[in-house]
Image 1 (cartoon, rainbow, N blue to C red):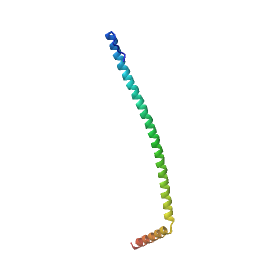
Image 2: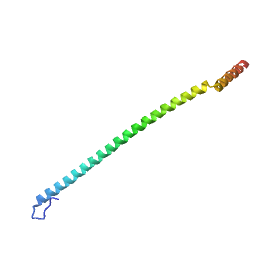
Image 3: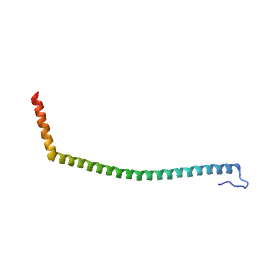
Length: 99
């Protein structure tokens, strides 16, 4: 990069080689930083999507719990449930009376 084919002193050539190595390392460091920044931005996007999905799952779970509660209330208020429950209580009372 900095080398010349002219009659350059060995000190100058060595200094140029060191400068070239330093610049190559700095360029590699910069590209690492850019790559890490792109990775961090991608991770932030992924994290936002993950949080959105987590919120969706929480809403779905709340809906499911609400539906289960409504189904239980409906079943308990149904005539069939009341009849079976009454039958069960009567049967249980008869068994306890036999003892």
